[in-house]
Image (spheres, rainbow, N blue to C red):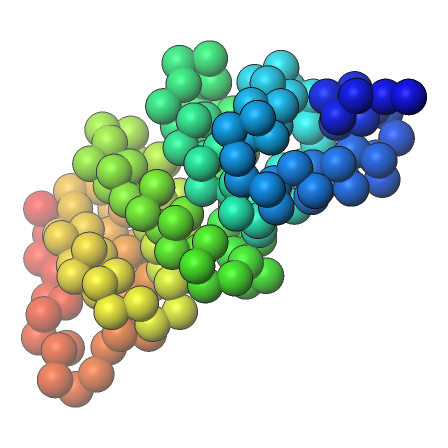
Length: 170
C-alpha cells in the first residue's frame, strides 16, 4: 500500500493526477505539505500542476513557489504559465485567490515576471479591481509590460475611459 506522498511521486501519471486532485481539494495543512514537498522536489509534471492550480490549494502552493528561493526565475515563469493556461477552467473563487497571489509581482523588478502576472490578472474576466490594478502598467518603461497590460486592459475599454490609456513613450 502506497502513502499519499508515494502516490504523488509515482511514475504512473494517472495515479499522480488523481492523488494531486484529491489532496488539492482538501486545502489543509497536511495535504498542502505533501503537495508542496512534491512540487519543491520537482516531482510533479505540468498536467499535475495544472490540476492543482484549478483547486483550492492552488493559490497557496503558488504563493509558496513565488516566495521560495529554491525556484529560479525560469521555473517560476514555467509554473506561472501553467497557472495562466489553466485559468479558464478555474472556478472564480480560486481564480480570485490566484490573482491576489500574483499581484505583488507587478512591483517585481523583472519584466518577465510582471508580464506573467499581468497575463494572469487579465484573465480575471471582468473583475472590477483588475482595471485599476493594470492602469499603472500602461505607463511602464518596459515595452513588453506595456503591451501585455494593454492586451489585458482591452476588456475594460469603453468610450468613457479611452483617454485613460493614452500611452506616451518613456
